[in-house]
Image 1 (cartoon, rainbow, N blue to C red):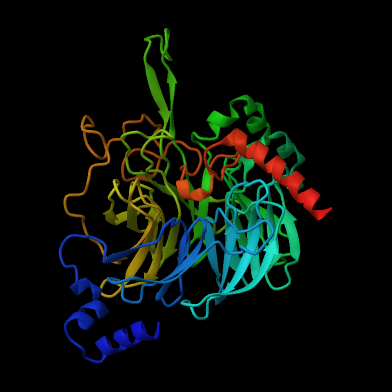
Image 2 (image 1 turned 60 degrees about the horizontal axis):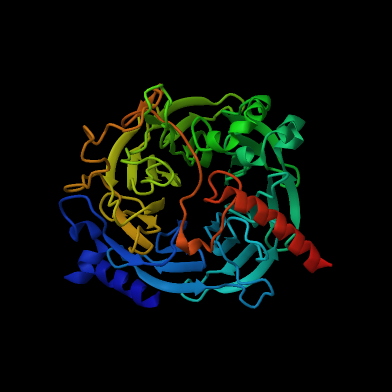
Length: 505
């Protein structure tokens, strides 16, 4: 880090040539919109950035990594930690999909896993000191008896997704003491939720702004909680929360309904004001019909559903949210679960902009200063090599600003961290995201219902889980949004509990 800091300082005081270009990245890539740089990091999934934008922290499936992005057209891997907790009797920690910096202490990183049940494997939250990003140091490990798909960390508290196949709770953990301060559940609000299959009410992700937590509860909608007292989170509002009786009534169609819209609340975040909420929905299409009769009596099958987008909500009154608009997903030539994913994934609001990822649909920037009319500013995709997990602002500004996009790779192309300009632009000769027979790239091959207030193409449509990945250690779960292998995941979670109980005895 010292060497990179010296390079940046040298450029600012008058160095010329390469150093000057690095300090002003727009000078390095004039013309068409394209990445500044990239660095390969196998297994890349979630990424977060330091407050000063100099370092990116990555979840890598089998570990975590730190990347120096202070010179955005030359990102460099600082540390690549694989197999953490290898000395644990059930180690190492695997299936690591998420890492988070403490929002109030950026020298503390929390690494969680496994994202999905792994029978016999250790699970929990690893606390890491990243005051020197090139030499991260383990501070503590807090073991759990449940897998952790995602988390959020603020004020020394880790908010953990606890999908145990029973309660499906949001657990609040003190990362200093390791004490679980509270667990909040839907069934604690209304016992009728117990009749809904846990896969339909999975806790997929959580975002915390100030004293408010937003919980993406898949088909159960987004729940808004007051966490000013972390020992007693209380429900204060919600977005698209359905009647639990209606969800329970469709249990027979649970697997299918869990992958199709509406529902599928996958990722949530607010802007700095806390009044604008984004709800990303993850979904796919399913083929129905065929055979002798077919879905419509013609003997032909058809697709229902498709990829989903990001809804923007006014949550200034949590008890009465108002939907403002929808940013639609890019089209896909094959929007089924086994096809080309272009549904919404993780995103971030910053300075009136929305930075979003769409798997093989690429990364986008929108001006959301008027959230009723989001304006697309830039879009980059390379579907044959990049499948984006997230997009995060590192440093704002059209001249020297940039954001990072974390890709898990496609086929033989490894996971990568890309850096992109924080200015408007258009990709030169962008690759098509539709088949050759598709009429235009803005027309989805899947029929979807129109959604009032949507932008950027057809309305937000349908939903399901996280694409299979060979680097995931075979992790799977019984709920949408968590990977393939629903039945195996359910059995795995039950087996895991038995093994852990036996080990305690």
